[in-house]
Length: 154
Image (cartoon, rainbow, N blue to C red; front, side, top):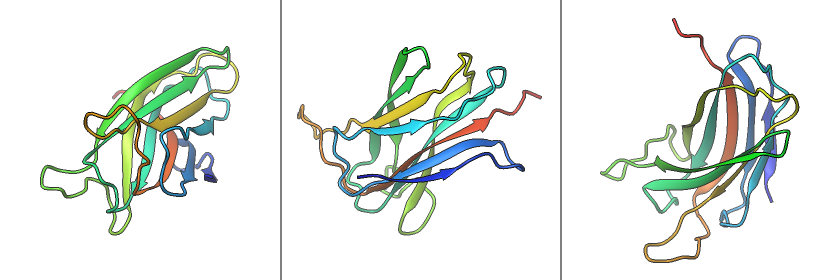
């Protein structure tokens, strides 16, 4: 069961939306996390990030995710994403001591051109080598989405 923490528009930043889901470990491969975005300005450009917190219990140096964007008209765009989580020497790339915060690029300079609400769904796609079945993923404590208003090109 995932818990939800939300943050909405902040007056002094480009943050449009932010929400985390706290995971009860392990994160099972069939557990999809859903994020419903507020209606956005269809003329603005946005950057979308996947935010992930992990502990030293995370057993891999990379992370594969499947991310879907659900459009108001029913269309779905699916992306398979790979992120590097650790350096070759085994040190984590995220910031923090016991829990590492990772802000991972997902989409850059996109428009929410259809009127209505969009949703994003994320699940992991981690596997052991030579295995078809997904693994129950240890060490991931929270997964989130943040949407920022893109800075105009200068």
